[in-house]
Image 1 (cartoon, rainbow over the protein chains, first blue to last red):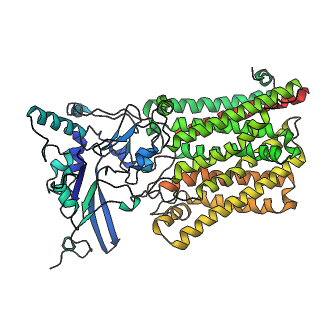
Image 2 (image 1 turned 180 degrees about the vertical axis):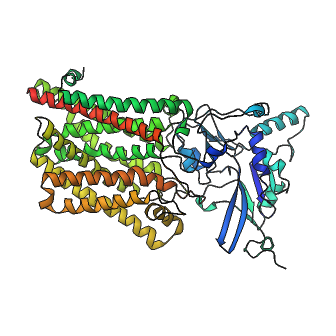
Image 3 (image 1 turned 180 degrees about the horizontal axis):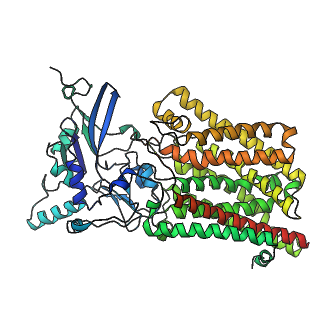
Length: 238
Length: 385
């Protein structure tokens, strides 16, 4: 049984936001007009957060792409009163939109704030309707949604592998954000498979897990920036 | 049925008041229909502050429901005879406030039509399920007790013997509603403001102050407007209860402040900074919180000096101050303060919108309507006798 996980190399991330846009189109995440965006109603399953360290003038900005980290011990599942969210045997934390009552308890339990509530009926103006991904359902208003690690892609990849009578190979199934990353900063695969790229990177000395101290056991793992990349706010060393 | 016919006869003032409440309820209803249609976009809530006024009001009114236990406990366990006439008032106030709590939860839901999913998929590891069990049970207990007691009183017969164990069961049950409501918040990793074991004791203490405080005001109001007199001794005893509970409540808050500010752990302190001095330019809750502090301080002085407390006007003023202070602390600061800053450090402004306030006002009006009708029935039953 695979355990899907992601490794994000912060030294490579250029904060180009391609992952955010790819996720948006892949998963039918609605565009939020500027007025509502200003009021904090943005839905984005993955966000590039500007982690700011230090104080002016000695500060550094570390762009950090943050999707749902698919905890092995997810606080969101514990609190849901209707079991509308569950972790599957492969470690993917999913949401049942048709059952969610919209109480937003999971949103508050998630220390990564990666659960998004639909404050209103999602709008897809004009041509956006044509561009909707038929593999992913459009959510109604009043429910919580979140990153699924592009689960529909896994189903597709499995079907294709089965049709070709072979096992699912590394690289067959990759979420949209990882696929698009032009800097090659994101890796995806089976953490259980000792030989996979993600498993190897997860063993790196630069590897750390976000908010690890909370005991959530996230499966999104970061690789810290090296000193050369300006992490101390002084710019590159010469 | 349920002696409702007694609520149908009343003065013009009574009917005027009911009409006024019905107008407020209608206004709230209109806004709620809007919210049903467009979604929670009509509120001031956002990604970082996902619970606001609705849930805060729910939290506060769970506390007000303690009005029942604070008269039932002395009456049944300590034989405080003076409370005999007012146990029913406390229980009926509890019925109304628990109903308000449930309505506040309902209006906060994104998909209210699916509320019964909580019963279809009972989830023992979710505190929200347990909150439903404890609130529903408390509502049922108090409804049964008050209907049975009042019917007995109307018929001039002693209450059935089985009602006493039911009333005694309602005492630990009352403790459970405050504890479970506190547990809703205090078990979330990353929400440091709520992640504290003192939250449940704080909820109990503030509940035992705010519930009886409102009961005092209602008793004084009944004495002025109707023939019903709760009795000077009963009101004084309630005053003593509020004095103790409010002191303990303030003490618990100070304990929390000590832990946070002596340890100087930044993420612990920031929530209090946001509430009391403002954070990153967001200061809109600061005047509210200091008003709460001022109200609590004045109330404590008025309550702790026996000579002051024993005067009705002073006790009434102190009760208003206690109620307002705790409303701000629990019904505003405690919930919003827990969201700012977010676990990832963002500071977001939350201000309730006009439709949001109107819906809240509508739910308050429903509570006030229930109380008016319930007390009207009670007073009529007693006038006949």
